[in-house]
Length: 270
Image 1 (cartoon, rainbow, N blue to C red):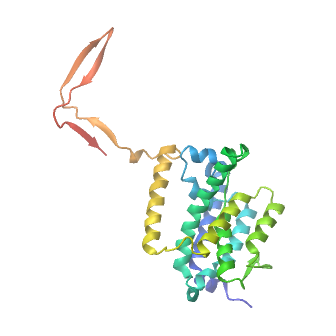
Image 2: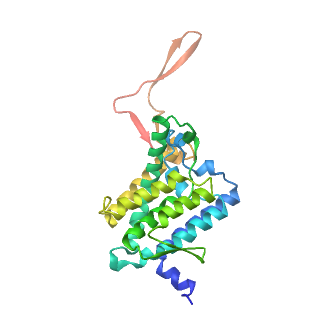
Image 3: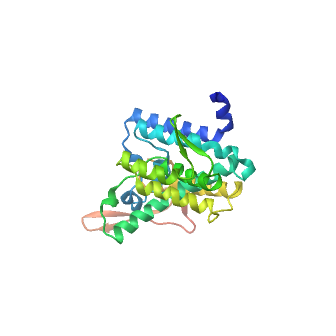
């Protein structure tokens, strides 16, 4: 008999929080009837400056089956949080989850760009990716390298050897779910191997917080630039002091109002 769920949640705090966040977002999407095109990542939206979609697409799921499959796999992969003796643990899990969310999204866009520009496959211009699968496949890959004897448990009854899980799952999902993003899953595997083999390394609390700060900054900036959300409270408007002298200039049948500024008279009000 396994441990009570409460104790497992305590042993996998980061995984539990991520599952809670993804589930809450899924519930909100269902309640508000939000379509995947509003939160997903595509080549067209990226070139329009919707960089915030790299984040929203990762944590959004449209169907319940999609959510359950990803969260079931993620729960099993949460064992990474318990492997402090192998140099992994909660800190490692959080730091490299952040890296995988960003890099896998960027790699998806890079692959789309190559297929569109080099091979003229216009289909990928409008393909929209959504879901946490990139990160799930990334952790499958890392665990297959770090602890190949592990098992990937799905839905509580299906067990796969972790050493083969990344590519088994890649083929399995592509056959069973034709709409599954092969490129998205493959991107997660590539980033996962880059981390597991030490090609991407050196993350610590300082760099993780720095990366998180930049992500937040770009997220808000791209939201405002794309006009996806009304952020007028961030607007910086240049206005002229009404007490400054004003003169009227004749202009055809009407008049042109011209403000004459005194030295050092420009004022920026936030």
